[in-house]
Length: 246
Image (cartoon, rainbow, N blue to C red; front, side, top):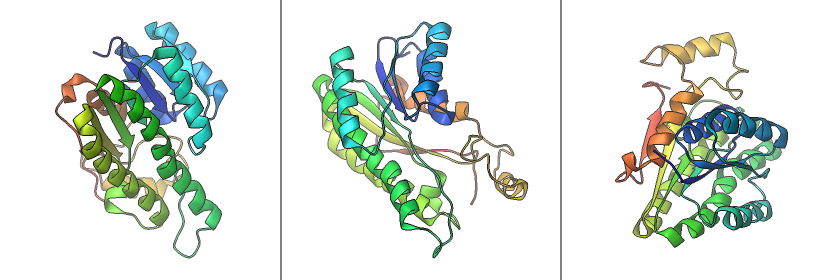
């Protein structure tokens, strides 16, 4: 489905990002894996290469550093000469009631979840424009669409990614570049592992499909958006939440 395509996945060292990398590699994409933890990236790259015989380039990078991201894209350009798919997945989650959230927490969440997306979006668009094609998939959240008690800052950051997506889709569409977002609900990852059994039960009761989601559930939707199966889909937010109500 993606044979020969070059795909970059941010936040690829764990959870949803790692699942996205597996889905793209299984479908024969050539991969650039990036996150801050080089050892985890190397382990995933080794697994992907051995399992799918796909090319995996590991580039550790902090999404909040525009200098690091620019250097990453120079390496991508030098190595592959192009970019077909960007899965802008890197993100952080932090809870905090209003009046209890520190400036440090606010800066950390907004820098990763908003600035990190913008840092990748700009150089990715420049590379994709050369071939007049490409697919950019931004990981938002159901919280960015509905809000949630105790997650005002996180909700703000994920709502911002939807504004970024819709604006970028309008701007890049004439260049043949599609931009979409996914909005996962309750997904079993490290980011949700800390929740108490009581909260987990509350969340589960609000899911029509009566189960929590898996990283693979999300990765399969990313695969659809990355492929030509979604060739006329742009500027859209696809919920991956099992019909969840918050």
